[in-house]
Image 1 (tube, rainbow, N blue to C red):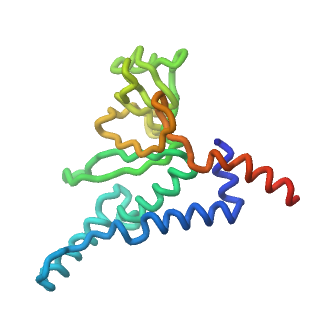
Image 2 (image 1 turned 90 degrees about the horizontal axis):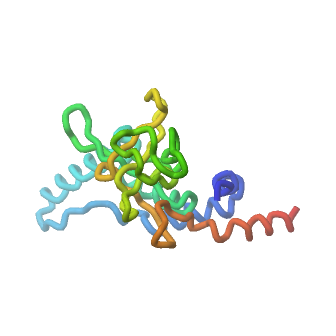
Length: 193
């Protein structure tokens, strides 16, 4: 599965298929529209919707909510999951921070799959960056953060939305949609060369 990203980047047919699926699934479907019969009011509301669409991402208007959902569709296919941290700006306005799957992992001191370096979660099981309770319910996510001394931070699960495509009940991370086809694509690539 780790080989998926470089392969996607070099296999135009695979990368194109992932993009086409994202276009088909999301395309213009997440565009908010007013259902008001008052044309002036509807236009004003739709302008507000456009501003909101471009104001939620912590990085600014180049990362609209609609475009991030499209990106998320691609990440589900290639990585199996992605994450959104619920945060706010300095004025208290709600903001979203979208993260790729490689930003969540088992960094720090994790002995035999258990957290050993954070008093809030010591003794809790950690599975590829997801800290879980005894019933496999996520309680926190270990996020890579180079601005911190440890190089990561544990963010409580109630501040993170984990978008994923799981195959089994005991999974804590998603499985890339493309995982089942990667070996077949490698075989095809070898027969062409």
